Length: 263
Image 1 (cartoon, rainbow, N blue to C red):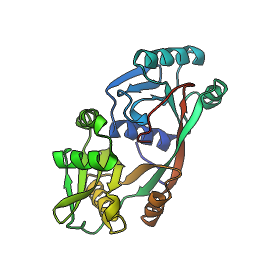
Image 2: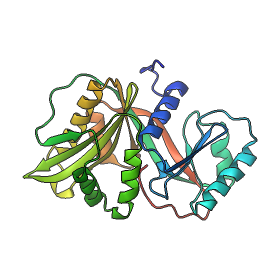
Image 3: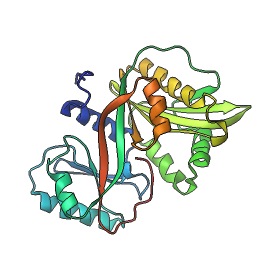
Image 4: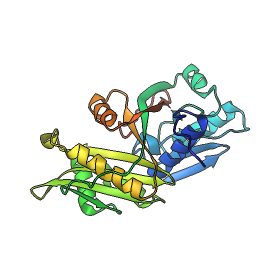
């Protein structure tokens, strides 16, 4: 599919970015249900534990909602829907709001054209598999040791080329990030830098290494997902030419307690 970069929120591009995001973080269980993609991963990350209503369907909406709520109830998980432009059907968000589904995790999808760039910093190492060092760095910086086994399983299930990047100083890892290429699109994920080493260029180095790698892999459009209230991340992204393509959020089943996680 040819991507119209000058139409950053076109339905075609939104759908393609949402497909790429599915590749960027698989789920442990996936059900394809009449145009909807029902994903579960034992509660790790909203993205891997929600309904992605990506395609048109024929089943009545109320019937589909009952089906999804029952599926998540069997897994002892709250029912979440990812809401984005062109999600199907068009009245889904309005309907869920009327059913007292709360709105959560307002998120920007930022995009930029990819071009050839200069070499990355020598303080940055890039691997095409999730090394033990990368995972240990992610666990330490995220503070989410309880999800390490699930994350390893999900990363190993990614079907397209991936990059795992580590920043070091004095032999100590102080930052990490990852990227996934899906055709001509690259997704950027999980950028974290040790608080004691922020403001020293490590975040910039982790970003540049992935942009270089993605271009070499044939990607020509980069995207990332960032919470709308994360101003430090947005500031860095704007400096590199990222701009908002569209927003998404989640509708969360009433009386549910979803752990905070990746947007």
